[in-house]
Each structure stands twice: as C-alpha cells, then as structure tokens.
Length: 80
Image (cartoon, rainbow, N blue to C red):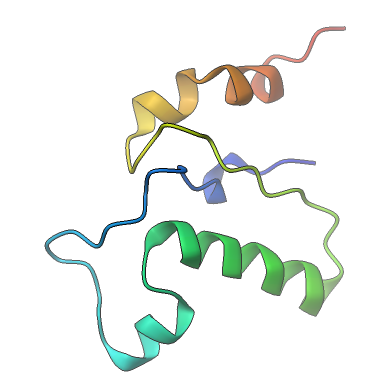
C-alpha cells in the first residue's frame, strides 16, 4: 500500500522560507524529503506498517508535479 500524503519529492531537499529549523525539527531531518523518509521509516518500525514510501523523482514541494507524475498515476489509477 502506498500513501501519497507522505510521499516526498526527490527535489524537495532545500529548506525554504518558513521551514522549521528548531532543534526538534532538525532532528527529524534537514529537508522535507529527509523528514518524509524518516517518518515512513518510523511508522514501519514502530507500528509494523506495510506501507511503501515512494519518492517521486524530479518533483519538489509541488502538488501538481507530484500527483501528475507517472509513478503517482500508476498508484492512483492501477490497471486492472
């Protein structure tokens, strides 16, 4: 099972204005990509979730790019 709500973009690596850089936030990771991967690992380890985290290449923090990427479309609209 994939969860697109926590799918990071492969280019989502630079902190932007307003990005939380507190000590507790930075312990989660230096970018949204790192934080998304850390969260997926945590849920899998802590709760035994069988979700697969998918990094969408060539996308940053951009919903249109994420949800129209071929990788996401295969998950959203699987072939019967």
